[in-house]
Image: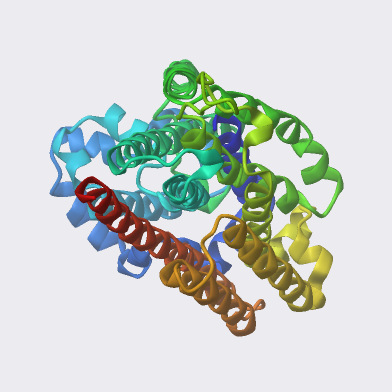
Length: 441
């Protein structure tokens, strides 16, 4: 999970961080990256807000003077004030509780961990929830000749889901720290990342290292002590993909391939987390195995879900990349958006067809397609419809429209999430009813 989140964060930030030249032009032309509060900025509003703050809040508000000399080589003083103004109002809007502590360091750490921008974490978590729920449903149906009770299923699902949620937030934060440490001398040259805590001097390198060590320790503890051993080995298997990332982002047009490969590893880990949590009877039914062997995992269903989430990520991240294509050309940044150009939609349609077939096969292998699984079946068709509709509707030459449909993918993923959870709740109720009938007879 550590490698997944780090690779996602580094990949996601590459475009903006490498645009080092012509930053003022970037600031003027790409205002849609700023918050919706951008239009409210004026020198009078800035003064009113600043004068209304307490002394500690003013420290939170202002850019530390240690980096101002370097920042002013790229931006004007008024532009820096606008970034301060937007940043403070953004924090006040999404995380007002932070300001109540009046702690500049606490606010900076929260920004370093991207707690105010959870979209990436939610997209990362979605394939994990799918695989956790699918495997829990398989256990209720008698996977590997072991039918879990309602209590065992709920306890296992609840525990593993909690661990995955905690792990996703912790390790995505760790990835953000690594990213900011690496790009601390670049971020203040780009408008969108100007106020990042390391770029403007609110967090120093030593503090970032301590934060990273703490987050990494928590993540490894969850992986080692909370999850079955199958998850450990599956997690390690993703490391080679991370190592080849520099080759992809610098010398090929397919950084999205590496992003999609790592970002959706949770679609495999969720199966191992649930199915690896049980003991299984030997064939002679006289002894118990301690755990499930790797070869006994439902690899076809796992592979189908992984292909599904991989291609889904390829689709929405290519749409995301079309926002920056004009600036990527100037910065010599390669992406599928530039490689496919005007042929992007036909390629996306092709991937969507393969994705829909893989999703159907994965659900079918897991026993989640058919008249007895109406909700999960309906969620598959609804998700596919929304994905095809996105490709049809998105205007790849309109950055705002690309951003809109990129964010919509989080809602589209929730269609399957909700469908699976409803199906799981129904099967739990049905399973409980069957247990009652058995006891009655």
